Image (cartoon, rainbow, N blue to C red):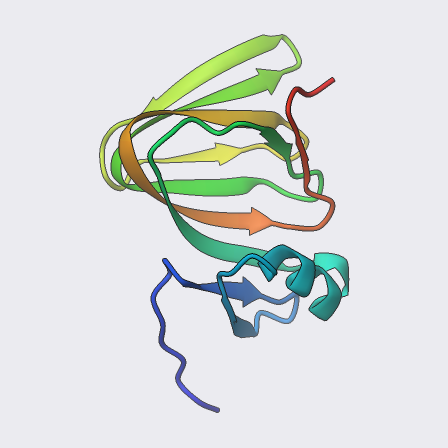
Length: 132
């Protein structure tokens, strides 16, 4: 057993279905690499930190589980496509979070530079410019 340390801005954590934690460098091959290394990401979660200065240019959905997004700093508005229409939810206090239900398409509008922590069930994640 060894203690692992890192910085969530550049080294993400893959939490396996056995609840083991693996560190993965955040680079342009990350998503391809974790898909191959962790069996299509089946039963795994990605714990990641991102800083945003502009709106997301795509929508995403996570069909295998709820995504948890925690605001570390800034202000961000999530737009969710719910069965009965769109809903916007703004996080503006550090420590506030949103739990995006599995199967719900979502995107984000950045009000000011913002840092977020994501706990994402990665299996089957899809990204599109505009959801159907």
